[in-house]
Length: 180
View 1 (tube, rainbow, N blue to C red):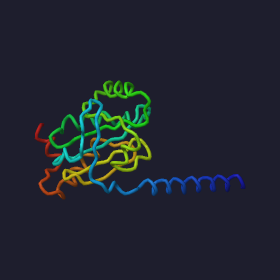
View 2: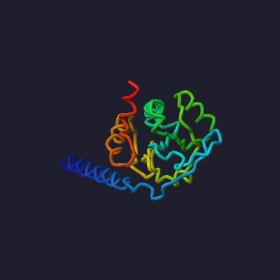
View 3: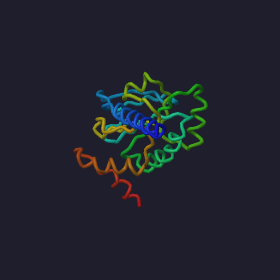
View 4: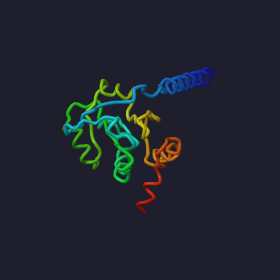
């Protein structure tokens, strides 16, 4: 009987810690509405440069399997929606920039890659785990962020639902439908 009670107690503690972790990771999106990064080619990228577009800032690492799993969806989204979406990949926790760039090339990444660190990430918001993706609306305001893997489908659904709330913004799904 004691063993069963200990298991229940242990599971309760784990559940409590998990719930606490979820609550603590729900930190508000960055209050500042701007950032300036320099990509691996030396080009400056500022949030204000992309006014009128949805901007996705994806923090990832070469050693992170979920990060590598979501990149093809981000590439696909970017390639099919360059007119209304900008994706910026920020590589974190790396030792050798060449390794990052080789991974980006192997994954056919066509959007800008920034070699980042925690100081650079603070311009956008907290990055406690990888992957983490921040989404800014076409007016440059923080819209949402996600810790964990994102999919093209979920991103497009979110942008579709929220484009109607932004003046002079076309629903995200419309641009894709025109090309069919």
